[in-house]
Length: 214
Image (cartoon, rainbow, N blue to C red; front, side):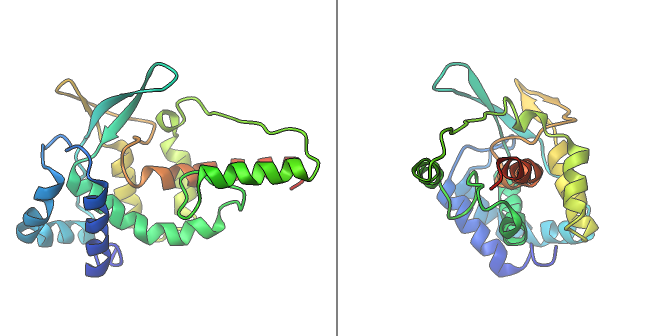
């Protein structure tokens, strides 16, 4: 957690939050309002993060139409929680990403869907006959918190970090002015969710690779 709140790490996270822009969370704070707010309040937030007492706010539900019909539900954290999640991501990503499957491309730095397609094309050129596209329906909505936390506990020794991630997972969702508790899932919309998804899917990636003989 000391690495998360280190000045250089938080400054880099703030720049990333600025670049990403995005809608406000339930408190209505805009991205451009965050830095002035931090000048007066960061030391108190930092102390809460270090002593393990920080409590994230619920996310704001926002529905985004899917190209094929239906909607995707996003959970928009407050800009402060986006900053904290980004700060955590910058510490955890270098720890976890090198251990993921070399054939995994989703939500990973320096990798893209285009590269995944190129790899599939290479397999075809090598004589393979099939490319299988698997879509896990509502995966983010069905993440089991206990299973995910068990995976994280194997790699993270800082109990404050683990408690904070659990709180982010369990933070409620505000829809139509009402906060609903959440017992499973990790909301799409926060910087940390893609990494948490890859932590949970890593064993699936490696099992698929083993079954394919690659």
